[in-house]
Length: 151
Image (tube, rainbow, N blue to C red; front, side, top):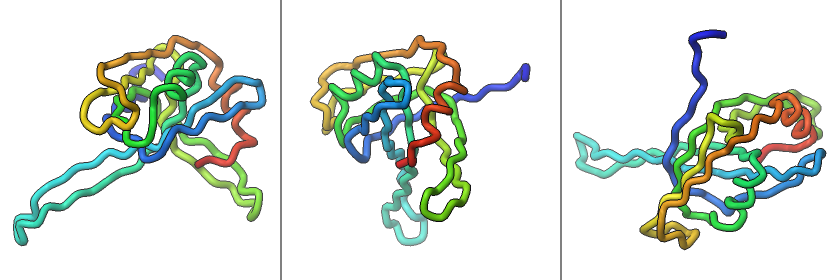
């Protein structure tokens, strides 16, 4: 469809160490749990409030999966650009259809940047940018992951 855009930009911290799995086709995939937070001061009580949103990130690019596996740990701060994707899968126990919404990092329109400093968990002192440049067919990747139970 001309004139549409599916792009997500997030800066947040990893809530857990990355999970690396092998797909049916033998390629690796990385799954990340990313927290983004906003904080404010309650006008009535003066109390500091915070709200955290959790995002599922899936990295398909082989080179980027290796970087994720080597350098990222729980607490690391990252910047991601990807596409929002909703995937349907069947719960093996109940047999019901389930849906997972994820930010997919794949292809020329995606990137992941490790942000250094502070308590980055991964011990990265400088910015490291790895952008994907893989044009795999999304339908092939979706089929490979049908057997997988999401996070």
